[in-house]
Amino acid sequence: MTKPSLVIHGGAWDIPQSLVAAHRKGLKTALKEGWQVLLHGGPAVDAVERAIIVMEDDETFDAGRGSFLNAAGEVELDASFMDGKSFRAGAVAAVQTVRHPITLARRVMEESEHVLLVGMGATRFAREQGVELCSLDDLITARELERWRSLQGKPKAKTKDAFRKKRKPTGTAGAVAVDREGNVAAGTSTGGTPNKYPGRIGDSPLIGCGTYADNVAGGVSTSGWGEAMIKVVMAKTVVDLMALHNGDPAKAAKEGLKILVRKSDGFGGIIALNKAGDVGVAFNTPRMARAYITSSMDSPLVQI
Ligand code: ASP
Image 1 (cartoon, helix red, strand yellow):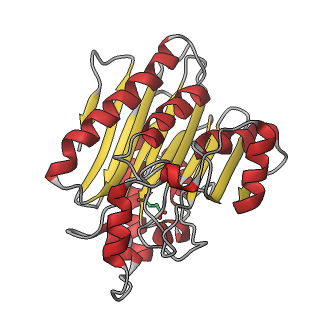
Image 2 (tube, helix red, strand yellow):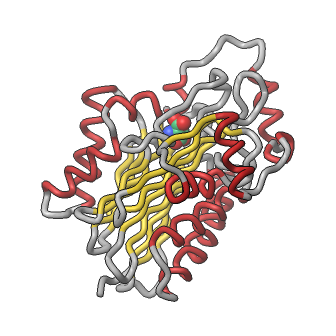
C-alpha cells in the first residue's frame, strides 16, 4: 500500500502582500478537502477534483468564479485532467458558462472518446452530462470587471509581462495526488491570462503542457506564462525527468524550470509528485501559492 500525498497550487505570480492571507486560507481549505478524500481511502482522481473545485469556487484564484476577463470582457475557462492509472486524459478550453471546468474535464476523460473539447461543443457536452452550467455573469466578479475596464484603451501589454515582478496577477489552480493504491492523478484549471485575445488558450488545458500523470513516474501541474510552457511541453518534460532522476520530484521540477528559461525565456511554477508521494516545487516568479501534505506529515505545509 502506498502512502497518500496531495500537493496543490494556486498560481505562480507576484502575489501582493495584501492577497497572501486570502491565498493561504484558500489553499488550506482546498488541501483539507482533497486530503479528506485520500484519508478515507478515496481515489487520487477524486482528491484532485475536490481540491480544484474548492479553488474554482474561491474568488481569490484565477479559476472558475473570479477568473480574469478576456479582451472582450468575458470569461473563457480552461481545464485539464489526467489519470495516471488508466492513462486517460480529458480537457476543455474556452468554456464560458460552466461553473466547474475541472469536473467537465474529468467527464471528457471518463465519459467521452475524446481528449479535448472546446467552446460550444464543450458546453453541449456539459449539458448532456448534467454538469452544472451557470450564466456568464455568475463567474464575473466586480474586481475583475474593474481590472478589465482599467486595461481598455491602453496599449496591449505582452502576456509574458503578466508573470514578471510587479505586473498583473494570475492565479491558476492545480493539484496532483497519489492514493493508497499508488495511483496518480493531476488536474489544472484556469481563467488564463488577463485581457487575453478571445479564443486564446494557454498551457493549462493542454495535456503534457499544464497537466500530466503517469503511474510509472508521478504527476505534474503547472502555472505561468502559458505560451512559453507549451513550447517545452512542461508537465510531460518534468514527469520524464522524474523518471530519469530516480523519481526525485524536486530535482525534476528544478531542471524542468531551467529548460523553460533556457528554451523559451519563460516564467512559471511547477508542482510535482512522484509515485511514492514525495513532493517537488520549483518556480521563478516572485511567488507561488502552494501547499502539500503527505502521510508522514502531522500538518500541511502552506507556502506563498
Ligand atoms: N498558465 C496559465 C495560462 O497561460 C496562466 C497561469 O497559470 O497563471 O493560461
